[in-house]
Amino acid sequence: QLSGRGLGHTGGTLDKMESIPGWRAALSNEEMMDQLRTVGAVVCQAGSGLAPADRKLYALRDITGTVEAIPLIASSIMSKKIAEGTDSLVLDVKVGSGAFMKDLENARDLARTMVDLGTDAGVRTVALLTDMSTPLGLTAGNALEVRESLEVLAGGGPADVVELTVRLAQEMLAAAGQPDADPAAALADGRAMDVWKAMIRAQDGDPDAPLPVAEETHTVVAEREGYLTELDALAVGVAAWRLGAGRARKEDQVQAVAGIELHAKRGARIQKGAPLLTLHTATPERFERALEALEGGYAIGDAPPEQIPLVRDRIG
Image 1 (cartoon, rainbow, N blue to C red):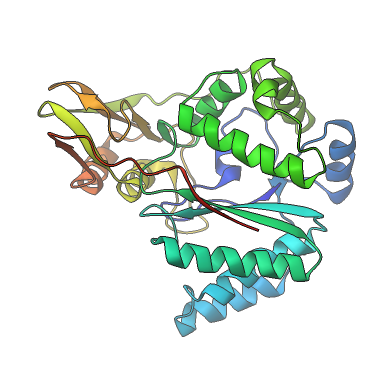
Image 2 (cartoon, helix red, strand yellow):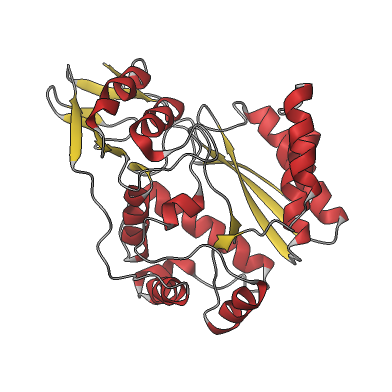
């Protein structure tokens, strides 16, 4: 997986991975291919030579007001995926308040366009449209999300993260000609964790080292009893960004420890005074603006909300 860094409230895979002590994002092509042969998995940053025209086109989109044009979004994403030499591609297209595509129809249009582009280029392409109106899992941040991912690799973790992980893995295995392989079994018996640790070691990281922890925390509690009827992904993402988990400019540094820990999911029954969210940061002066971002981002009501399916659609 060739990954990037976050900007604004959108998290970057490399920022999360770099919370692992020693882990190295930059690999040469030779190192990457050797690791794929010996370990079977690699996550690293894309080199500057990958689809270089995309940077120029994005700058033009920025000044022409076409950043949100679906054909240009699709070409930006797929040009890099096709240039990687991919045989098969599974896309996770997020939809909802925390995603670039806020509504299902626009997300479908984007997914169809990307699937068509991939197919035309000879790449077997499938897209899952998955809900991002409320946070996935119970964390938003860098080290916090890595810790949660390790829980999933150890056979535990939040049910929605496990569900999506297994579904995406099933799609990838089917595309690779192994439709009967069982990714859930690989989580349960430790095989997935073994490959994770080998991948981290291959990139100079220590998979057994403790992840960094924030010195400063602030917990938000429920002001009344009821059901958690709203927990908005965008509000949580912006709050995590303001705590230091993201950057406003490309040159900004992120805090590995910053982010938000959720104590309940949308739809949960809540008691008055129970913890809802815990904010994590290295700089406590960030709490005020993060709490402002959360205003209106969660609500407690008398009746449970209608549940939204995690996987909204499949295209391809």
